[in-house]
Length: 279
Ligand SMILES: NC(=O)c1ccc[n+]([C@@H]2O[C@H](COP(=O)([O-])OP(=O)(O)OC[C@H]3O[C@@H](n4cnc5c(N)ncnc54)[C@H](O)[C@@H]3O)[C@@H](O)[C@H]2O)c1
Image: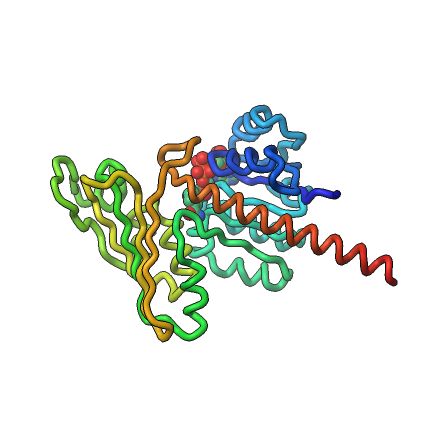
């Protein structure tokens, strides 16, 4: 069976989880190209998982694969999507905030007829939000609850001189739009961005960030109300085995998206072969 050829842009934590899944044999795919702004990271990934992959430029990584995974940084997203459109490759964008802040690149994708996959990332409930949108949603709120040390260094707190040391009770440190939350708490950007894009947009989605000294996980609670009724979805995340600062569920959502794309790709190959035989 032919395997879907994958190119990875950004060879860090999420890329490692993808390599583990592909090398474990659970996905009909092979990783053939790697790109990272730090070539040593790409070389390191290739060595660690004994990949038969080339470390190449961004454009070569896209051109040399059937499917492209962006697992780098928000700023890399416009180029990855534009090059995927240019070379007619479907792609997965993990840095969803990069899409939220550059929505115009989706026009290129539409014109090229490629699919840009967006993962559910570190939250659940996006399926319900997307379905609910078909009849209209009035209100979406995301409440993120973290131990105070998990918020340390966030620009919003640093700029205002807010210290969370010695907190004994949960404290709401931010409430505002998803657009403002992205600037204030860059570490939460992808969750807020994914929820906004699935639902009523970055300006109308409300984000609340709570520092909770009793919290033992990073949790995200979504509440939405609309013509369909109401939904509440709660995720309590364990850290990723490769990176304690990242939620494991986010990496697992990348694995799931890759698996779904490989299945769709295999089905398309099968249909094309069938069409050729019956010509
Ligand atoms: N959708 C979600 O819920 C979710 C959750 C976690 C992380 N993410 C995002 O996914 C991305 C990857 O996360 P990670 O935990 O694997 O990060 P990581 O820091 O472990 O790895 C990122 C890698 O990308 C490389 N890189 C940085 N800028 C680059 C560029 N312009 N071009 C090419 N390579 C570049 C870095 O050198 C590094 O090797 C980040 O943007 C992160 O915010 C999304």
